Amino acid sequence: MKLSKEKSAENRARILAEAGRLFRERGVSGTGVDALAEAAGLTHGSLYSQFGSKEQLAIEALTEVFAQGSAKHAEKGLEAFLDHYLSPRHRDAIGSGCGVAALCSEMPRQAPALRARFTEGVRSLAARIGAKLAAHRGVATEEEALAALSSVVGALVLARAVNDGALSERILAAARARLLEG
Image (cartoon, rainbow, N blue to C red; front, side, top):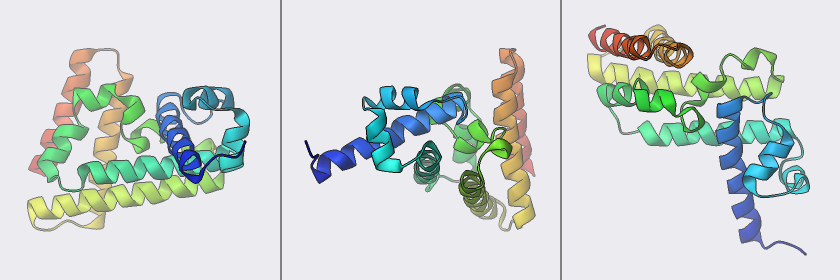
């Protein structure tokens, strides 16, 4: 039975949403096609007919993750962005949080095309943070934007990694304070 264009588009969107969530929660390497198909409520065949490979699915899912992150923070100034990004809520929401922080340690072992897409996402996030820094401070260099990106991602990754809740919150607060004073 042939699917309508609307149903096919709906399936594709569901696959991308679930893949984005699972890849952030478990990593690309830690997420099998079985788990992707089950989460989307579809078959392996549906995944492969839509994307051709797990790698292509990962590339497109990462594209969606970055687009959603960009849209979510587009209108926020630096303080509001940092309040969200460096919050316990964001720290605890790996599956719906920042794709850069969730996947950065895994990227060196991924295929070149996926790494290229990730790199585009990093550049885009750095540019958005740079614009927020410039609006807050009056000016910001690309190096300052890269340093700020490194600070927020590093703080989020460290805050997620430690098993001491108080230390985790101190990491987030210290990064926020430093970026706002700098």
